[in-house]
Image (cartoon, rainbow, N blue to C red; front, side):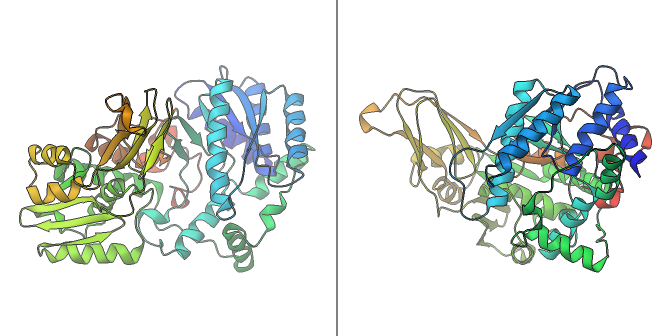
Length: 459
């Protein structure tokens, strides 16, 4: 259905609050080339005055042909009159986890290119096929129930910097290829997309063989509603002391049968543990069993101590596996996944665990915590010292709590809960997307017209 591609592009542009410049991520494959051409066709016909396009190709430098492929995309963009950048992943590549590392680097380079080209957002060409694969992969990992099972979000905030939008989630790859074929446009096929060493490729092959589409149990609307309810529970029942201890009201702590509360509590725990994901199903059940029992005691999961007392539940980082971190002059680094440290001084600083830092003990006691909890929590709090001992008194470092769960990738439908968590930990709220956020509430774009596709496959 070639016409569906142009219709999706038009509806995507109608979803913006105001015209802007869109950076399209283009690899040269059919999906991304179709997205660029469709948006160019709509904007070029002046259907949408005030919009402009730029494009970026990420050369991961993982194959000998990648540079030539990027050059071919550059030539295609030049024919269309679209500003284009090629960003190359330089340096050594990891031996394991290459796809995850490439994904992180890709978004970093895209965000840099967007800033350079003056773009307000990034558009990627993920399709309904990609969505089916994502749902199947999460289901295979035991995420077949609840909010984690819904699939990819139609809008994702990267690095608190820029929104990444996915306007083609409602289209199939066949739709896009039919559109390109009708226009006489060829595309590249990346051989890594057929490499069975990668999980997504294996899942894609299995889905083609079965012809069964995995159905997401949760819709985007359900996920957004759950996020809002979890945010309300966080605001009502959780306090955070000095960014290192969470105090949970005793009456609410054990209500782990409530899916929204379970998600709220585990999200706060993930921040305290410096984790960018929630624990697996077995660990969640272990946590729920301990918390629901209501018996005083302690357990550890995901690097976080769950400390049950008669007056409530307390969460804090376990004082184990805390590596030191050196931050050079004028540099920034992340310590333990929990704190961003920026060194504004002339000398390097070293970030370590406080261990028996009496200042942290006292700060937490002054915040109203029992001495026993304060002392245990203080052991994992950050301590900053000059790397050369003789530079004492010259430390000029800024320390900010980091929300590992959301600071790199924040799905749009989770922004309500993310903002509640940010407020708990003294962070600024996350910026709103440039598109109307109706789909965060009901799975639809402005005017009730879905531009993301079937809401049951989105998140």
